[in-house]
Image (tube, rainbow, N blue to C red; front, side, top):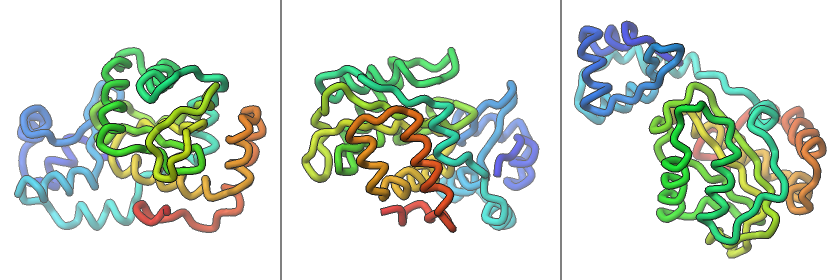
Amino acid sequence: MNLTVRQAAAYLHVDESTVRQWVTKRGLPAHRVNEGLRLNALELWEWATEQGVPVSRSLLDQARKSPEAIPPLSTLLAAGGIHHDVAGDDKASVLREIVGRLPLPADVDRGFLASVLEAREAMGSTGIGDGIAIPHVRNPILLHVSAPVVTLCLLRRAVDFGAIDGRPVHALFTVVSPNVPTHLRMLAQIAFILRDAELRRLLRERANASAILERVRLVEEQVTSWPVPGSAR
C-alpha cells in the first residue's frame, strides 16, 4: 500500500511540508514515482513507531487489508534477465559482474550498489546452500527504484560465497526492491520456489533460460498460497 505525501501527512496528523522535512532530515523512507514522492504504509508505520511520532492505528489496519501486489517470480525474472557464463574469480568480482547486468534506471550508481552488496555479504553470506545465493541490499530504499527487479546469473565457475553448507555458489538471484515489505516478500517467494529439486538441478546444469522460466512457472502454478515473510525456510 503506497501513499502520497498528503495521505501520509493525514495519518501522521502533520502538514505535508513536515513530512517532506522528515524524509530529508529524519530518514523517513520514501521513493520517487513519476517525479512525486511515495511512502510505503508499513515502512511509514515502522518509522513512526521507532521515532515516537504519533500515527493513526488505521494506517496499519489499512496496510494489512491491502498488501502491495508484486509480480510472480517468473515475470520478474523475464524482465530482469537470466545470464549465463558470468565471469568472476571471487565474491567481489562476481558482484561487480552481476551489477553490470542489472536492468536499473540510468541514475543508479552501479559502483555504489556493488559496494553495498559487498558490505551486505561482509555482514553475513547470502549463500543459502546447494550452490545458490540471493545477493540483496540490506536497506532497499537506498536505491530509490520504483519497481522490483530479479536477475539470475549463472557463473562460468562456481565461487566460494561462505554459504551455510560450505559449497561454492554457481547461481545467484539478485534482488532489488523499492521498499522493505516488497523486499521481504520477494525473498520469501524465491526461497519457497527454490525448494523445488528439479529447478535446483536446472540451475546446477546451467540450463537455458526458457527451461528455467518454464520450470519456475510450473512451480508457481502449483502454489496454493505464498509463505509469509520470515517463514520461507
